[in-house]
Length: 463
Image 1 (cartoon, helix red, strand yellow):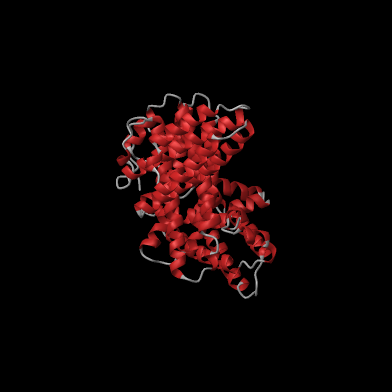
Image 2: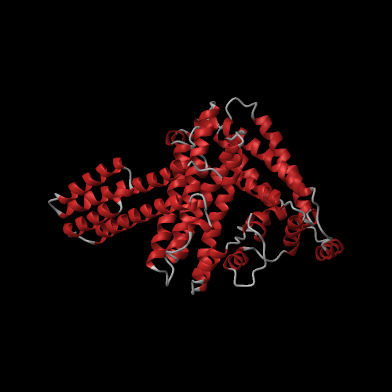
């Protein structure tokens, strides 16, 4: 975990974190600092991530389902998913007990004074009652433990139902989200995207690149994007740990649901903050576009293909293989995404300062992906903006890619590329050129995904 040094120079990550952390409650901040000082910050992080993961998993949009299952959702049994939730709830209870044993550092005098004043004035509405019942974060944590225990007991009862269906699954989700909101400090904890105690990145090379960006808003946005992706890498460590020791894996579906939700959020963040931002260089825009596309595409691919039916899979070897593949694909996507963004600002950045063992191969794969993405963008512009495309210019651009970048792809990819190129060359009309160009774009998009996938298999990714 990155250190928490007090930087003498400007720290872009620290500034970005400060803008994201919800202000206004010193009790929560003091409690987190106390937990960190007692060495239990990893337990708090684990609690936060698994609580969020369950919330994502209980949202049908982030649940690993095949198209056929979605079409038949009302008659589908959710027994396997509910069992996974139960296992994840137990993990949350373990983390919560670890954190609650740390206690709290001091009496919260300000809120005690408010409590006394409220009692004297007998202002006892629902908000006040909630306030009085949860004066400290430990009070909220105790209430959370009670709620988690009630949820687990309820799930045990639901398991007696022959085919617990979609409506029951939705009800569990609504109740769970409401219980989180009722736990005052837990709700505040989960409303904050980042935490200085375990999100701050202490890497001199990376901070040096960010300091070179003159526009403060752009610097902050890029720092936030990198913080997002580093968070994803931390989520994946939960999976890699159990992969390494060959432990049960099915409950990690909730982590992949969380990754799916947050990767889509980051994709939207990149589009809103960088692609549409002013003063952003073409290289950074191109990199941000590629990363936004890759994150959304790979997370959807994992959820809709790699992890489909894992909740009901009975063969441990198949579960392991699917989890390992999903972990590797997203890990490769995240590491490549970080390097893509950094190289767009500093082409000479030393990859080994971030990912020592995989730096060279990541760089090679990233270079090919960037070239493919540049070709895709060129063809999109042609198909959307030119009513009479110049076929000679298109063939010239394709020939340049073929000579410089095609040799870096697998031999089996060459035939597909050359076939599309030949088909375009003999097109007889503008409509034919545009139609075949759009098909070529689809081919390139599939190829980008394959390059990302191969980056995992060639490197046998392990954290």
